[in-house]
Image (spheres, helix red, strand yellow):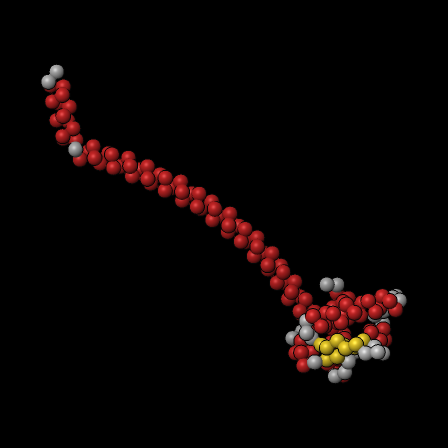
Length: 158
C-alpha cells in the first residue's frame, strides 16, 4: 500500500478517536491532501479509504443522503493504540517477507531431504551387498576345513 494512503488513513483514524465523531472526505480536503484532484478522483479515493476501514473492521462506514462517513467504534480506539495503519502495514510487510523466507527455507529443506533419502538408499544397497558378501565369506570360512577336505579327497582320488 502506498505510504500516502497510510498517512491519510492514520490521519482519519486519529481525528475520529480524538473528536469521537465521524469523518468525511472534507476533512482530508481541509488538511490539504487533495489539492491536485478533482471531485471524482477524491470520491474514488475516499471510497477506497472507506473500504480499508470496513475490511479491517476499524470503523463503521455510513452512507447518508448528504455524505459518506467513517464513524469511530470501540475498535477504532484499540487499533489506534496498537499503532494504527502504519504499524499494521509494517507488520504485514514483515509477515510477507517472513513468509517468503519460510518458503525458500522449506524448498531448501525439501531438496536436502530428497538428497538425504537418495544417499540413504545408496547406503542401504551397500549394506545389503556387504551383508551378502559377509554371509558367503562367513560360510566359506566356517566350513573351510570341510571344503579343504573335500578338495583333498577329490584331487587325491585322481
